Structure formats: C-alpha cells, structure tokens
Length: 248
Image (tube, rainbow, N blue to C red; front, side):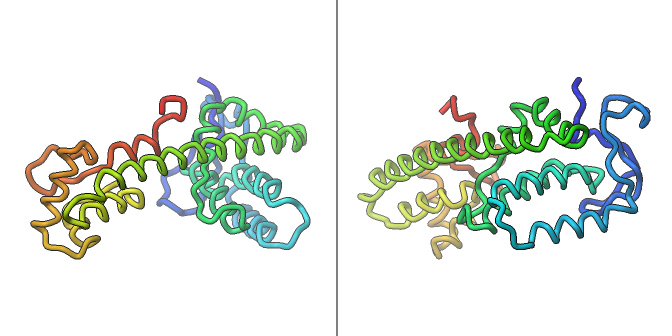
C-alpha cells in the first residue's frame, strides 16, 4: 500500500472541524521517525492557517489558477485536522474557483483526477516540500483543472440533452405539474413525496400520484424498499453526474 498524504494520520480522536492538538505523521510506518512526511506541530497550526488565509485574500498579479494551486499545496502541507484534510482541501479548490470569478458556482471538483493519479498527486506534493519542485506540481494541478473542466462540459451537455428529452416527453401532458416536477429533478435529483408537494405547492396525494407515474416511467427509482417514508432518486440524472465519463 502506498503512503497516503491525506488520510494516513496518527493521533488522538478529535471532533470534526477541530484543529488537531497532537502531532500526526503520514506514511505506512507505525513510527514517526520513519514517516514519509511529518506536518507542522499543532501549536503552529493557528498561525500557519492565518498566514494562508492572508495570502488567499491579498491582491496579487499571479493568475488565480496558479494561486489556488499554491493554496491547495499549503493547506495539505499544514494538515490541520486529524481527518478530512483531503476532502476539505479539494473543496477549497472549488470554492476559490468560484470566489475568484472563474466559475459561477463551485461545481468543478478535482477529486476524481487526484484519486485516479493518487501516487503522482502525493509524489508531487512531497516533491515541493522536499525539493522545491513547484513548477512540476503546478503543471500537474493545471492539467487536473483542464481535465475536470472538459469532463464537466461533457456532463453538462448530457444533462442538457436529457432535459430536452424529458421536456419533449412531458410537455404534452394534461397536468403541467409533472413537467415542472421533472425539470426540478435537474436541480435536486433526490426527493420524497413531501418534497415534491412543497416544490409544486400541491396536495400530498397529487404529489404521490405524480411520483408514481415517474417511477413507472423509469425516471425515478425508489431507494428504501419500504412501504412508508419512501425516498426517490432521478436515476438518469444521477448516472450522468456520478458515473465515470467513459461509461456514459
């Protein structure tokens, strides 16, 4: 098993979101002296995060993508939590892309790119720390942004095509509610009957009937297998969002 930079941590348990108060280290060894990487000691974390926040908010001529790549590296290097550093670091990329005006919403995620190249990802981060190889890391990061942007574009096109298909399929229905419900699935593919009733401002019985029709049509799939408190998912929307792009 290769070393895990993002989740191979050691230390006492901590509440989610709580800065670590013990020294952790990363690697497959049980001994810190053999660790591949040792993050800063816990007493330094508040100041390091304050410095990182200051850098993230300061005016600079550096292209936002390059700065975001630097910020992601620095956050993972600080490794401020006992768990979840990787997930939060990847979320930080998306939030910064939106904040810096590169995306209207934070819907570009590099998780699949990093996970598919996990060894390279870890090696690049460590090479910055050990050898100052910033250019190699930033090129890897930028290739990830390009790859995920291309993938997001493909998924968006598939969703647009599916939306148009649904619209043609249901626009001739006598009830306008079913078309409105189908369109709402592209905003939130998960729902129950109460949610549908709230979306459409209709009675529970009406929402239940509409959901039943969409389930019969294969638009919705029921997830609980229960007779009560049933929960549904828009299966085709979900597949476009979650399946590997080469399987769509």
